[in-house]
Image (cartoon, rainbow, N blue to C red; front, side, top):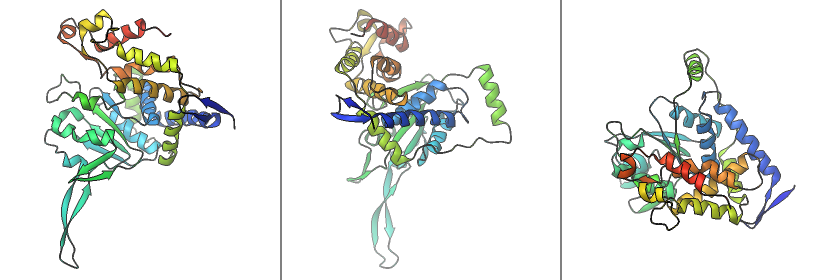
Length: 339
């Protein structure tokens, strides 16, 4: 089996394994395409998130098949799926689980037993995550970062693989809360869904109002997905690509000496080091799923909008002049040259 040297991991990456992962990516796209009409970019980036081992925040109005996409993904990857509907009265224990008293019918004694919450799944859909107060939103912090839950002083590991895909309503809608920055930063990608074209919507109506229902066939198992995630991390990346990712993120911070004037004028604060990590990890996932043998600058640029759009906080001046985060990212991608 031919291999490619990996300067970033100190190991060799099997070329055949990369080709197999690229083939599985295509098979997953084909399976999801049976039930999801259009949304090609969302499907691609959802799979990149999955193979990179990350979490994704999906923003958009209701009715754009966000829930259907994640449920279909769990079927195609053969993972345990749970949906948590976030509401204003949802409590942290409703997510993580709680200790309950259980009576032993033989001895009559009571003991404390942990009752796992819906977060104990492989694939969790946090639906309308910004409709619940920050206290409850914060219950997801430990699960997303450490992939564990601590209740009553005891820590319980979550099943592996573990991924959170959260949907978020536009913050202008009534009854929404701003997602805390610390939690938003734990999402690898922020994906924006859009309305389908007329032709796509016609296909949606035709497919969803008929008697026949498309079936999803599993393409990859949970253990195989974990192996694929290890392969993605082993993809080589040069020092030049890492420096480019770090340089791009540094330019988003208004206090950084290298930040351009428009960032200093319109940005309240920029992206954290997690952005640099996810730019490189996303580039690796992009390379592996397209059959490339190493991560490159194009891969970093390909995932830049998804990585940065929820990590750059515009200031009042930007809002007053209607300067969007997307506009700032586009300017940065244009101005920060590949060296």
